[in-house]
Length: 303
Image (cartoon, rainbow, N blue to C red):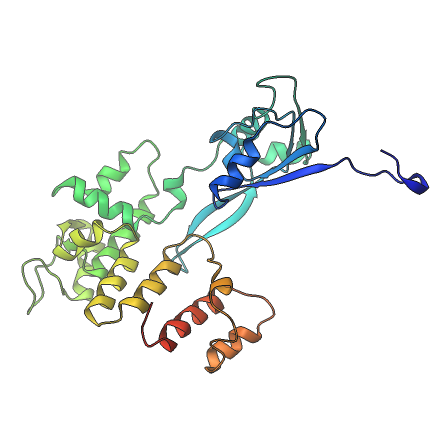
């Protein structure tokens, strides 16, 4: 409508957020049918709306042409969300959100040149993810065979260099046995404490690994990355369960936890590191991790 002074006034709107962290009640509200004559329903959604759900009364899709994907950074050894161009397949899926129960329109907020640069399909998750946990599971499934060969036989095999790197990291953790090296002196037959240098040399020689150690079998049963699982086990052995659990919760989460909302920034300002984090103008994963650890330590180890 047109308001005073010739200015256009937007119609009444009901705005909903729709992503994986939205509470179930809010997700249901976003899927409810609009009331005839009521405010216009606007749903701001992530890629969860591409295939996972259907909004029955959607008549317009506005596609920004971007997507957020979790990718493993081998240098920092952490998973991080990155923004990239959505694939042509994703664009087609987004367009398919309208027109299911009536006429629909799609507005794409990018040029034809940008559309020509995008990939036909999204990169398979196995190619852009950490392979440590997957290699561990493959080692368990191979039952004495080659975990690398098992991964190479998948429909979208990961790069051989990434598989080899995962194998070396697991050998360094003591999760798998080296085909080239017997258990180090002072260790049991499972090689729970093998010497890291000989393990690395054994894997690099091309012989690979020969199965899980007892530690590896235990790590394979935990729903976290092997290095995080090993930290949890060491925390239990050293009597630091709450602190290890707090650190594991942050490290095992592919995106930043909202620890700032859980830990008051002035509650841990007694330590210099926490004072630095609290004085930072913008919160970060590192500062929130410092605050969480300081809070646990300040509570005498109580979770």
